Length: 463
Image 1 (cartoon, one colour):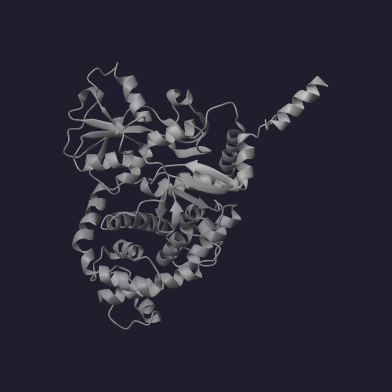
Image 2: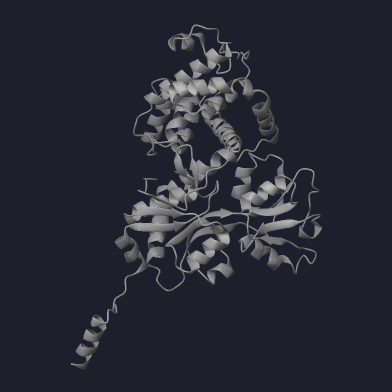
C-alpha cells in the first residue's frame, strides 16, 4: 500500500518515472536540430540549394530517423561547442575534430573522415621548417582543436607563440593570410584544398600533427540512444559505399591543384571575360542556365578565345561544329562570339533536357556536361555499364568511373555506341566544376553578401 501511495504521489506531482530517451524526444518532435558552420566543407547555400558534406550527412540522418532537419549556424565555433555542451541542439555536424579535451565535455559519434591540420602561409612569406622557425604572427580559431594542439606543442617548441581569434572562423583567417594581414594560420587539409582554388598563392608549410578523425558532437551524459542510431547510420553508409561517394563528390575534383592554370584563369576572368559577360548572361536568360556555368564551359573549351580552332574542326568560344550551329538555328560564323555562346547555351540546354528527370542536381548538370563533351550516346553507354556492375547510373560519382572504360575494347564492344575517349569527359567535368566554383566565388564577392538564415528547416532529401 505504501509503495502504491508513493507511486500515486509521483504521478500526481507530474514526475516522470520513465523519462524519454534522446532518440524518443527527437522522434516525438519530428525534428532533428543540428548545429553547423557556414563553410565550403560543412554547409552553404549553393546554386542548386543547400549543400555541403555535413548538410548531406545530416539530411540523410534525419531521413534515416524519419524526421525533418533543422539547421542552425551559430556565429562561432566556440558558440557551437557551448551550445552542444549545454544540450541546446541534438547534435553538431560542423567538421569537429575529436580531441581528448573535447571528449571530457561532450560525446562524439563515429568518425566519418580523417583530416590533417596544416600550417598555411602565402607566397612571399618565408616558408618555415618547424614551429620554432615562424617569422611572423600566427592566428588560429579560439577554442579550436588547432589551438589545443599548438598549446600541447609549446614545450617541444619553446619559441612558439600564437593568438586565438574569437571573432573569425578558419576560412576568414585563410583570407587574412592571403591578404597578408597575418603571416600564418592552421587549417584542416580539406579546407585548405578547397580554399587554394580561390587563393592559389596560399601554401602548406607542413602538417602540425598526423591525420585526426572528424565526428559529430552530441550533448554530454549517459544517454547514448541518438549516438547509437548515428552509429547504425554511418555503418550503413560505409557498407553501401555512399560515404565514400559523398567524400568523392565534395573533394575528388579539387585534389589536383594547378597553381599556374588557376592564376591564368583568374587573370582571364579580369581581362577577357568582361568582353563576353553580357552575352553569357543573355544566353543564360534565354535558356534558363546559370551564366557562370556557361562561361565555365566556354573557358574549358577555348579560354574565351573566339578565334580558337581545334584539330577536329570545332571552332569558336564554345567550340561547336558547323552542324551543331545549324541544328541550333544559328547562321552566323562560329567565330562570332555572341553566336557561339548562344549556340553552345542552346545545345547544352537541349542535352540537359535529355537527361532523365529522376536524376537530381547537381548530378544532372555534371552528366549533361559529360554528354556535351563526349556525346549523349556515350554517356548512356557508361550509365548502362555502371548499372550492370551494380553501381548507381544516376550518380555522377559512379558514372565517371565507367566512362574511361569506353576506351577499352573489352568494354566498348558491349556498348551501343562503341569506342570513346572516356577519360576526357571526366577531366572535362572536373575542370568545369572548379572553373564554375571560382567564378561563383568571385562574382558573389561583387555584391554585399546576404546573411544566412539562423535556422533552416527542410524535409530531408534522399542521399
